[in-house]
Image (cartoon, rainbow, N blue to C red; front, side, top):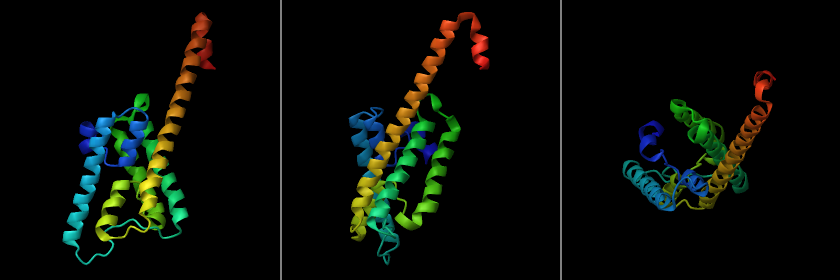
Length: 191
């Protein structure tokens, strides 16, 4: 889906991702609202299809913690943090990796689902958790999945911005040193 929709919408399938880009002022508010409406609508349509296909399912793909709510809350923050950190590092700015960005992002999602899925359900996506919870009536731990991904995504994009700014500052310092040294550029570059 990243490759299929990346050129059209940036493949914003996750409200926490869109929220993080909005907080960094990389996504205007009207676009964020449109994306959010589309994401939630898509999640409800998908869950409705599951309801029609699997009428006997009581959970309908609901995201439920296997351990304590606190454990899942903290892990979901960490999962969303890592996901957004990778997205921000490979899909924006001068660090763009082009065709490999989708593979990097999908790999993070896969690894997080593989390792944290048995504990938290590895939602990382509030819309993905909201729709099945509402349609199946399993809302007891929904608060985790509606809050933790937004917190983690916000922290992830802020950490990425900090690192990118720090790298930019290092670059500026190096170019300033190069300008000051004039004829000694080759010496500096070897150091």
